[in-house]
Image (cartoon, rainbow, N blue to C red; front, side, top):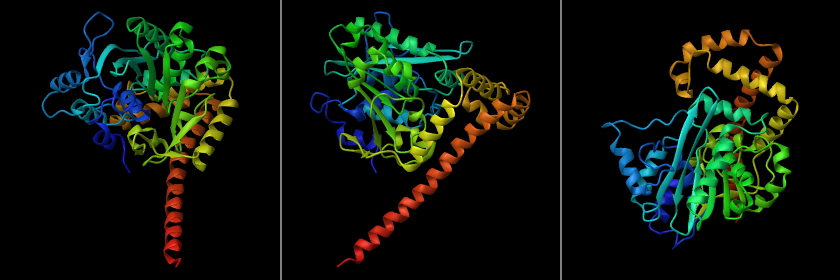
Length: 385
C-alpha cells in the first residue's frame, strides 16, 4: 500500500494552487520539523526566507561524504530521503522556510523546535517538532500528565504570535507529529483572539491530548471546529490524555507502537486510507491507559515520571540512542536505580512497561487473525458460483 513517498510521486508535479493543500501535505511538513536546519533556515532576524530546495541542498552539502543522518531511535530514517524528493518536486521545492527555533534545555527538561513554511497559496504552515531523541524531551512529555503547562507549550503559543506578526496578511495552518501535534493545538487555544481568528486549520498527527480543564475552556471551544486529529488504527501515543474533538482513524502498515511512524500510514490519492474506528487493541490501549492515569493523583504521576527518568538516566545517557548503544551499562544503572524506589512507583513502572509490551504483542496477533479471516472470506467468495 502507498505511503508518503508514493504520494510525492503522484502529486509532486502539482503545486498547491493546482491541487489544494491536504492532510498528507500536512503530515509531510510536520515531519520536516525533525530535521536539523540550524544555520540553514533563518530565525527571527530579518533575513530573507530560503526555499525548500535551497535548504535541502545546504542540508546535504554539510554532511560528510557517505554519512547518513541519524535522527534517533523512534524518528523515521526516511525523513532525509523525503527531503530529497521534496526538493525535486514542483509542489514543495519553491515553498520558503523561515523563523526557525530549535533548542533543548536539559536542566529544565524542555525541548522545542519549530519552523514556518510559506506554502505559496496565501498561507503559512507552522510545523512543530515532535519529541526527538533527547531524554529531556521525553520527560517533558510525561510532565504534561500532571502540569498545567510545560515550557514547550508556552513557547509554541509565543512562536505563533511572532510568526503571525511577521506575516500579517497570511492565513495560518498549525501542525505537528507526536508532541508537535499537542503543541499545535495548545498554541491555537492559547494565542490572543486576533491571532486565533486567522488560524485556518490545526493538525495533530498522533499527538497526545490534554487535561479536562483545557478541553472545557472557552478558547478551546472557539478553535475546536478547525482541529483535525489523525491517529493510526492501534494508536498508543495519540490516545494519551483526552481529545475534545473527534479523531480521524487511518490504516497503517505497522503494528502496535510502531504505527506512530507517519511513514507507515497508508495513502490513497490526496488523503489517508480511513477506517471506521480504532482496532480492538486500540480500544483496549485507550481504556487501560485511561484507567491507569485516572487511578493516579497528580503527585503520583509526578513520582512515576521522576522515577522513570531516574532509571533511564542512571547510566549517564542523554538520548534514547545512548541507551540503545550502551545497553549493558544502562541495564546495570537501571537495576540500581529501581532498588531505591518505593513499591508503588516500582509497580507503576512495571505496569507501564507491561502495557506497552502487551500492546505490541497483541497487535501482532490480531493482525495475523485479521489476515487469516480475510483469506477465509476470499476463499468463500471464490467458491461461490
